Image (cartoon, rainbow, N blue to C red; front, side, top):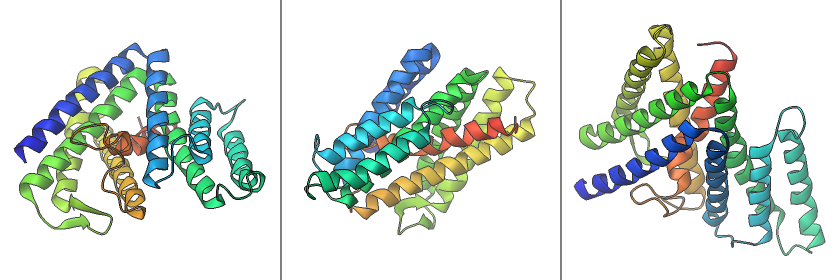
Length: 264
């Protein structure tokens, strides 16, 4: 466990440094990081299904994924991207005489929705009033939950949480993850925004933890469809970009809508 843990810690430190640098600069830096995540994430989705890079399905996933990331509610809407992707998924197999299947195109469109649309909420959250703070709190809360869950599950063991979907996760890890999320959310909110009610921040931390856990389990379920343990091999000790962003892909939309409904 020691060597694996060291590898995970080194990768996590580099990953966090890149994320926090682009978060701090904001603007184009944060958008470019999001674009890189979408490009690599869509590639990993395609590769999970053993489809080839630069084939038709790969291009649909990448273009639609970037379309979702670039979309705006009032002009170039996500629905417009989805509609264009749906037409492409249905018509390209006809035009290419079934050299690419409808199922492959549907998988590509799913990948674009999964990575591109969900990552768009990270950009939207950063663009909100006081967005820098909310993105930071979401990042730190999610990372704390992931780290506390990993350490708690590894050290304390206990019954499995959902073995048929994610064999490594334990109920103990989920509990320690929730505790870690709440502690970090409350600590940083008290430090940076002392006017926020801590009880509400604690509830926010629990909800972000639940969203991140669902994101983690969902990505595990996607991988299990294709019998894969990791989405890629880019990040030593973690797997692929999706393996590191799975929680954030659900945490960003959760944080965005919690802010929109006025929880905090």
